[in-house]
Each structure stands twice: as structure tokens, then as C-alpha cells.
Image 1 (cartoon, helix red, strand yellow):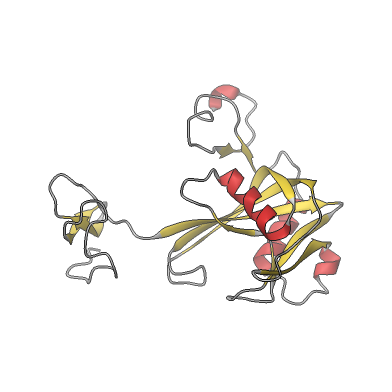
Image 2 (tube, rainbow, N blue to C red; image 1 turned 135 degrees about the horizontal axis):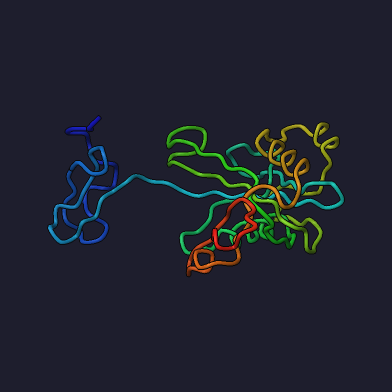
Length: 212
């Protein structure tokens, strides 16, 4: 279905590359804001973001942080946040764990992801939220008392006594606790595709390295 004569997205009247006017043109099966300059070729495909969170286990307990800011201030969730455009995703989730909870951890595998449409509970833009299992390395939970109000390692039984533990976080923790370290999407460290600059490649365990 083409969106004909629809208003341009707010603050998207001009091309961000060359400053020429944008207009609606068919591209990839629907009308999209496109640059009118003949040599630019810019097409606006909408706004999107990548979020990440980390399940860090220590002695059978999972690391949780309590939100200090809205939305959902006071609730408990996995440490996480947005991945920067120029950031390796495994480094991004490890950074978020350190920033929010003061714990050093290393990505082991991806255990789950959630996609949300723009304008829904996931936020104003379309979002993919990837949950990783991380190996605990060092550190005791620390928090800033502002963005993060509290942090700690909790068992599932203890979580059941805490008000406001987010369901998505508990679900991801249960998935991690009930699976092995070689299950899920594993970091692919060998093979020509795995070693391409700028790539982070995850996949099911493959005994044949030629598959990568």
C-alpha cells in the first residue's frame, strides 16, 4: 500500500546528506521520503534503534538494577541500554553492565530478542532489544543513585519477593538458567564472515567451520 500525499516526518523536510528537498517516492514496496537531488539517492527508511541487556549470573543469582528514572522508575530489570551506532554490540552490553551496576562481565551468547514497532511500549522508534548471557568476571554491584537506584544479585525465589521485577527480564533470566552455555546464538569467532571488519556474527553451534 503506497502512502500518497502523506506529510513528511517531523524534521525530515530536507535531505540530511545534501539539504535538498525530500518528496515521497516509491522505494522497496512503499512510498518513502526520498531526496530530490539526482546524484544523492538518499531514502529515509524510518527511525530504528538497537537495545541490549545482559544476564549476568553469579552463584545461581542474576544481576538486576532498579530504575531511578522514568519511564518505569522503581522497577527492577536487567542492566542494559542502547547500542551506539559505532559500537560493537558485545562491547555495548558489557559497557552497560559496568555503567549501571559496576560489574565486569564478558558476552557468552545471545539468548533472546524482542522487536517492537515504533509508537508502542518499546518507544517512539522501531526497536530490536537483544538479551545476552554474560560470564561474570569481577566486581560488586555499585550504582549512581540517580539513573540507577539500586542493584544486586538475586535468585528467582528472591525476585518473587521483590515488587516490580519486569517480566521480560525474569523471562530472559529463566531462559538462561535453564539452558547450557553452548545453546542459543554463539559468537562466531572463526571463518571469513566472522572476521569481517565491523561485524559481530552470532549463530547456532556449528561443528563444521566451513559453514561460517
